[in-house]
Image (cartoon, rainbow, N blue to C red; front, side, top):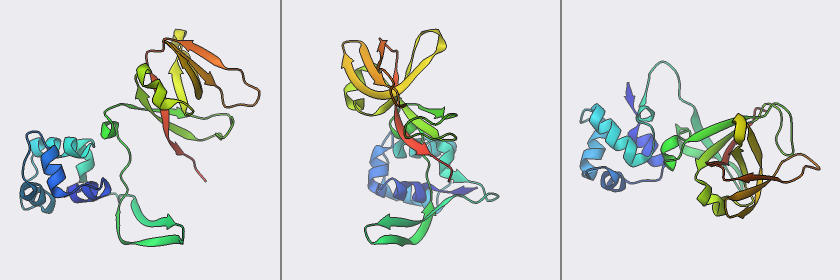
Length: 190
């Protein structure tokens, strides 16, 4: 197995010292550097500590040698597509990015800006966080195992108002949902 601590750390924009300080208990930048370079063995305990400090699942710190990892090779700027100085591993979002779980909604029939075949990744949040989600697309559980999806346009007390994405849809009001999941990432095949 190959250690990916440095790739993940750089992708997260953290220094060795920041990762070391975020470890529980804190450690030194030198220790993190030795773990990155393989000069010190990456035990299961260290892997869990470093992963928590970086906000990723522990398995993200290792990559097998059999399958190639997707690479970030360029960036799109005002001047157009630019090559990176060096390619780096593409790091997918995880549940630990904010501590809240990720959910996925698949689109089977086009509605509004969403097309059939899209996957919408949502971050599960507490209802009291609704003010942060105003004017964002959210998924809300309803009674009987059903769900409501739409733009969060209103919150009054324990009630939230969603406007579904299709044309001519009426506002849905959900009273006291146990959670809301806010859209975080759209995956669309071209």
